[in-house]
Image (cartoon, rainbow, N blue to C red; front, side):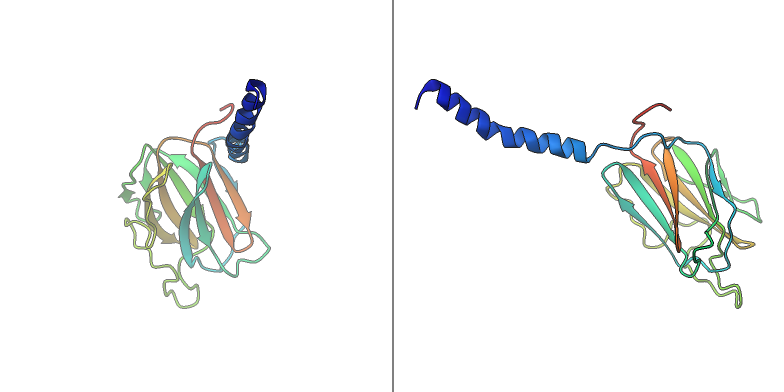
Length: 185
């Protein structure tokens, strides 16, 4: 084999690794433009919150608040950065770990409106039941603040004040917090 041919074979052998790295980098290109200002929707429902869960993604950490039965009329929310989380009704300070705190409010009770029985097992001031944040890049802490006058309030501690988006889907509200700032602030 000539030296030129050997170089071409070596170059071709290296190409797939480089192409894979390029494809991986392109596949994980993170979105920009979410910003960190408050996001709200004024819709409301009487369907109750039944679960709050989290997940990890390549570019962001995600919190999902499930409200089965909310329907297509919309599910109201307010998500914003706060200096401190205060429980609705009592005004009690609820400490939330992390470099910044997102207050997440969903316009749905965490109890049955007819009976008052809890539909979500959260306890005020305590971490969210069943949520383990081990291995998350952005999320640091979660705290259930309570459910008062038809609204459920949660504290989400994050690494720093980072961009976030809120998705309003049928039967759930989704909060994604980016791992980094990837564009103009």
